[in-house]
Amino acid sequence: EIVLTQSPGTLSLSPGERATLSCRASQSVSNNYLAWYQQTPGQAPRLLIYGASGRATGIPDRFSGSGSGTDFTLTISRLEPEDFAVYYCQQYAGSPFTFGPGTKVDIK
Amino acid sequence: EVQLVESGGGLVQPGRSLRLSCAASGFTFDAYAMHWVRQAPGKGLEWVSGTTWNGGVIGYADSVKGRFTISRDNAKNSLSLQMNSLRPEDTALYYCAKDGNTGALGYYYGMDVWGQGTTVTVSS
Image (cartoon, rainbow over all chains, first blue to last red; front, side):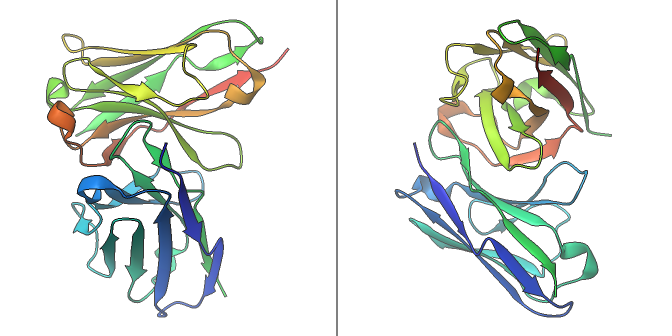
């Protein structure tokens, strides 16, 4: 099983600032099958990034993903008020598909 | 409109069974892999199980293996999760989610459509 670790656990930033979230895998994620999701309170998760760097339909270009192998990054270039949420990475390279524990981005 | 609607949740005693369903609409159901993901109260996301476009089982989380069974009926645009021998730690909001790819030959995309979930509470 691929175990995902996310850091930091909480990121306290102000609107307009840049957010950098990390996801590390316990083994290489083949085909860069790594996705990022955003979840706001009381809502279902929303797919942001697929294949480590592909932006899902309708996702603003301030969201970008990068990385390969075992180290991946989600960057939000300028935080908007609606971006304060919990972010999860997920690998789908091998069963069981696994999620990281999440990074909460909150308002400083 | 692309939509997933879960049903079948409720309060159940430990050791009992429950069957969750997910009704899909607005897209070609039999062209996509489908998944169940759960979220315990105040906790993170946990992938439970998935099925390829034609009913092949992708796998199960270790925590549910041998107790849960995923299935789909492409003629009815429906996904199911049979949950047996339920435990208190199975208490969660269960989401149905659509993959952006078929799952054939190991091709996946990520979960691009989610339902609003159905709540399962396991307690005596």
